[in-house]
Every structure is written in structure tokens, then in C-alpha cells.
Image 1 (spheres, one colour):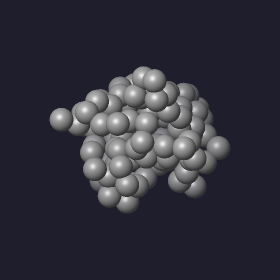
Image 2 (image 1 turned 180 degrees about the horizontal axis):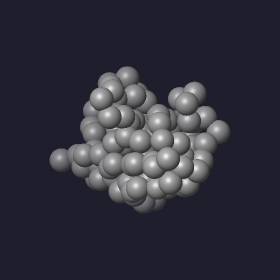
Image 3 (image 1 turned 135 degrees about the vertical axis):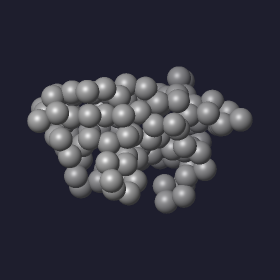
Image 4 (image 1 turned 90 degrees about the vertical axis):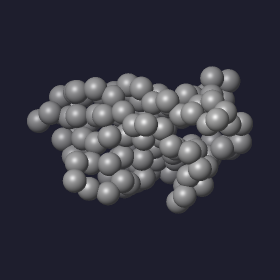
Length: 116
């Protein structure tokens, strides 16, 4: 059974930083593209960043230069370092494994709230 468990969501002030973690089990982590998505209040879920099995990264324009996605295959964990946070970054953040446009597995989400 595939499990993706996110952690690290919190309440933070504008300009602050957070690091989200997502640990996987039940999959061959190293061969999977891993992605971070978010669902802002009242909006649709959107892709934030993804990292391929080979380490190539992609970022949404809204987070480019502020967020960094990374992975540690030895720990089956993907991270999202978020700096210079803005109120518009407030959302539930999800990690996912598999195809970017149609992931095979999702975590339960971790909430991030950025206060102004």
C-alpha cells in the first residue's frame, strides 16, 4: 500500500520560511517523479514544483526563486523549502508521486498559513 506522509505545515508571518517534508512508503521512491501541489482556499489545486527521478526540477512561476524542491532517495523523502512566504502562498500543500499531470498517489496534505 502506497503512503505519502507530509509534515511541516504551520502558521508563519509574511517573509518567513518553512520546509515541508513528504516521506513515501510502498513505492520505489527513487524511480518516481515527485511533486508538490497546493490548494489555496476556494481555489483549484495547482502544481507548485516537481522533481524527476534524475533530479530535474520544475517550478510554477509564482514560486520560482523562492521555493526549492529536493529529494533524498536514501530516506524516501521529498522536501519543499519555502522562503519569502507571502499570504497568497496560504494553502493546503500535497505531495504526489507519479506522472505530473496525473499522479498515482497523493498524501493527505499539510496546511500552510501565511499571515500578513
